[in-house]
Image (cartoon, rainbow, N blue to C red; front, side, top):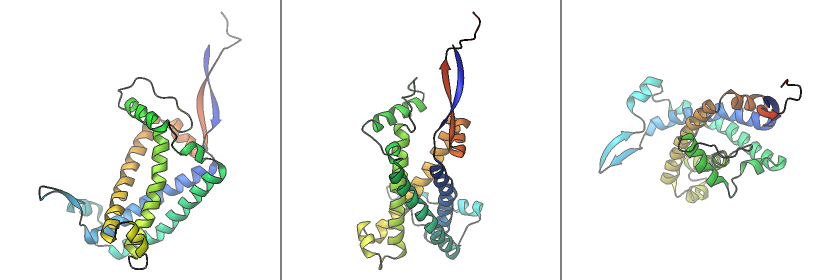
Length: 229
């Protein structure tokens, strides 16, 4: 027996384009959102009436040199928002029309598989669960990021135009609730970014290559008929 490798198609061109466009766009949204938040940084961690942590410490803004740029932040935020919205809408439409949604939406096995993936990543399980195009954890994460995108658009509109978009604001629980929800979603994006990058580094070059070229190299075990005894 000998091990050889074969190249298989994994990601369509459209999926790769949507992915790579969304990466800098989402980073730009987070950056410009920080410029806006600086003008009224109200959130922190309080326990027993004492503030243990403030989002974000003064040194954070000084290190990044981003204090008091509210107008610039709003201008960039609402400009990039249109790219974020259009890219996300086209992505959802493509997955529906192409049938890619079948690989992305969680199924009845996804949560069990996600737990197995977590145990394997923590080295508490020796063998990895069976891997198809996307495992259970990826299905849940990629579906969640779509829902988070929709939530960011709705809460953003509720904050930006609370009077004109009063129905959306009411749906979010009011202006204050919408602002908090928008902030929590932003922190969730950052968390998703970090986990996603760590998982890409852990998976290795082959996984990264598939999102760049659309093709993945996989092992193929077969008998070598010309091998001498």
